[in-house]
Length: 412
Image: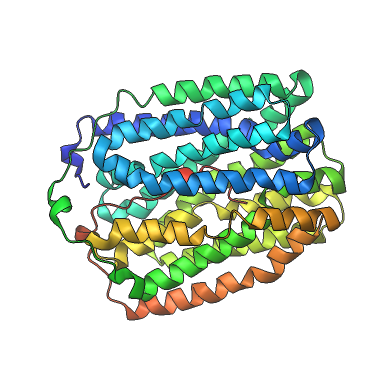
């Protein structure tokens, strides 16, 4: 599916509604997502391995529905598929609200993965509404709406938990998800371009060095991040004695920094170098884990979580690279393969992280810190490959189906 700005009726209204819906959606998401591990452990009595099962189920569900999103978009259209992705997550907070055991929470994790259905249709919208020379910036602005919606919500979520409890928090989240979903109803559909259907699919991108090194980079980061992702709030609680409001405040700091850094990274990528801009998110991820281990007390945590804001824009920049080096007929398939290969081990690594956390709360962070430099090696190889590969003219790159919904969950 492809479209130009002229082919979308009320383009400013449609794009504006998507942005506003994202802000509300992410506001609701960040009210609770930083605390799901603490909820499972402290309220429902799950151990660290059982907490890791949440990330396992979520990852499997996200992979499934992102994989289906392209097919559903072709059959139902972009608007209907996005709407399904938006409403799909609504049952999750309702299930959490009434869950009597940690096993029931895993059903909610499955519904969270339904948001992956919005992955394929969001990309054509952003691409159709952004001019070629500003495509990277447009995608990172959309990703930055994640941070904007998430600036006040983590600390507010922590305060709500302490004052009213988790059930009240999950009720508020469900209402916000419903509002966010219905904002999608007025947007216009992209017009179907039937020429894409008749084109022969090609899998030549598997031999493309840009695709190979981008995918290896994404695979490495995903694998290492999912070892630690859900256990960081538990680590903050156990090592520094932080309560929910304090943990939420740190998340707000990260999102505030990400709201500024994300668009800047996109601007640098468009005007300087996408691979050069990618260095900052990778260094930010590596530094975040390393600093969490190294700092002597909680007074340094605001700086550490501000540094964490560098991570925003990582996936958008990688998608922009692929859009400039993969032919249009191969682009959608290459991005699906990129995503699925990159997430191959993520259903397993949270369980490994849970076992490591049970042995030593710092151990998952140590493993990710020691192995993250591997990502820098693949980034160097990607940079060299991009210098030796002919870049596709921007006018040929009509769509970039970025997995934006995946970015809306906390990156680390």
